[in-house]
Length: 338
Ligand code: P6P
Image (cartoon, rainbow, N blue to C red; front, side, top):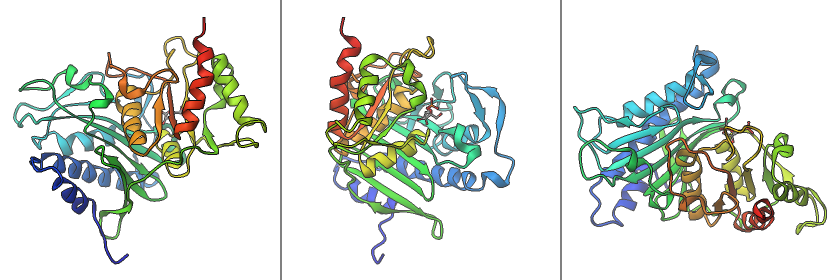
């Protein structure tokens, strides 16, 4: 590859498209990329050091916390809290918003993270990921607020993820296309490898945990049955690919086309809207998929239009190729018919 375009070079060239850019946002993305390199190093040697396994306590979600979860959250916090780029942080691992210490400048951006999604897969060496979502603050000055974190997904200025897989990739959008960078460990740089990523209009793959089938509503079950029949629009059954790691399932479908479904289910009365979180899972991936020509909804409404009420709010997530998501939405009407 004769022309290495690093992430730094790419974002600086993008910054020049915005005459009023101050470079703060560029610095923010660079700091997230730095944190990703540190997390990638730890993830890739996780089996060799005492960073596998559980911490012995549960997070705000009531889920077992992996040592790497905590590590990833702390790496992101330490890379960003002192930079003067942020006024507040919120993460899956923190019950409440995380203020920027008073000794540091309060910046104009808000960062929301799932520091290490798919952590139940860490110990079995399955790809996992970091998901991030960036907003401009709406509060005027001083420490950021909960309201700064509870903006609609349409207000995102940037969203992205890092997937720690066979290679480490950073994929992000600022609304001007979706671009992928692969970490070259020999030079320690993210290098442009997938410029202007677009998801196929329809796919042949579906991703869902069929173990929940009996808990799904009627329209959802009918859609899955349709995909598995030979009478569907492909005239052959869809392929099921489900890794159980959202970033890995999302990334494959972004490249190959297809639909990921985590619908609402009746499995857990405490989680009637499914398992995935709006702020730091559904919204950033929805911003990415729409900028790649795809679609993201709850089955009933556009993810990005939802006004968040709580930083850990859960939503059903149906995301991927536009025509596949739209077909699901037709089936899902039966779920809400009186
Ligand atoms: P289930 C991982 O724990 C995660 O949050 C996502 O990465 C993944 O898509 C989902 O949960 C898998 O959930 O219920 O199928 O195991």
